[in-house]
Length: 415
Ligand SMILES: [Zn+2]
Image 1 (cartoon, rainbow, N blue to C red):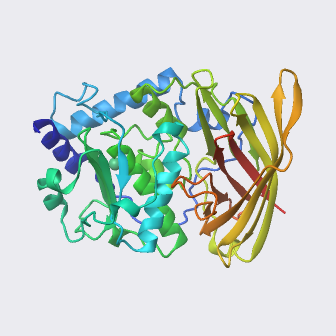
Image 2: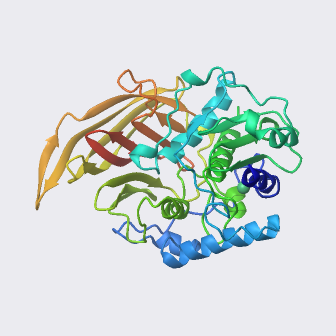
């Protein structure tokens, strides 16, 4: 009880995120210079401290400093009740069912970004069927919310919602006591009907969800972190940054990351994708890393488009796999399809055909995002296919494919 009050107070001072709606700024980080070779991330070396031991240590020290600076607490160094608060048992994310479609889409996209980076048994379901009775926080001020946390939030859940509150300096905030948590944004700060506004809300919700998963501070801006205000306000992001993933995995003991972890890597037009293989293959994490890119402007995402490219990953038996990827999408209707076929797996030294016909999915598009959530074969609440369109001309489509038989990432170039 007492510990929880402390965290809530911290939340007031630490978790405010003043990154409101962002413009498609010219100052975004270019992605040029990505080198596709296995196991070495040259671009990240140049702009942050990396995900090796030194980079992760620096990140954690900054979180500690931030905690100390904001809380006058001597508890900051204590993992569990300090700058990091570990959940006792892994939570679910819930949101009230009566939010607008756009608000639900923004929260859903943020969860998908997280899911792409989590071990399979830690991914969050995004079907809302069972949360219809959950009360909205609408009308509650931040102070109200903090004063009644135990009544408002149920144990085992992170309450995620975009609603109206008097935000002051805070466009959003998030936190946890390790048993319940919240990640909220002020709806007046985000124009969700605008693709950039939506994207900004997704980024901000990912930021707040990381607070809700236990991060109580912000790392130095030198890290390419979604928790870093500098990058948060300058960049546009569709994947959880590697350094955030690496520290999250450290703190939950899910597996050790290093700079040589990109076991399977490929690149299409500067967008890297691949599958991390942790703990001798017991944890596979598909990822897409576009760095900080400008979003595609709306007029690049009109009419029909088709994409051709590659798929890389591992089949369930643990062998590396590669195949072809084709997407055909209609940006005007918001529907499309993805085909992954001619999939080969490597047994020993030879590549053999593993699945010639492969897998086909119906896709739903929203702005620069797509996923397979309404495909009739994909109704478990966690879409098998999740991705986004990248670049000023929408010239790259990249994402992840996660099925029982295969864990893979793909990248494809517009025809
Ligand atoms: Zn924050």
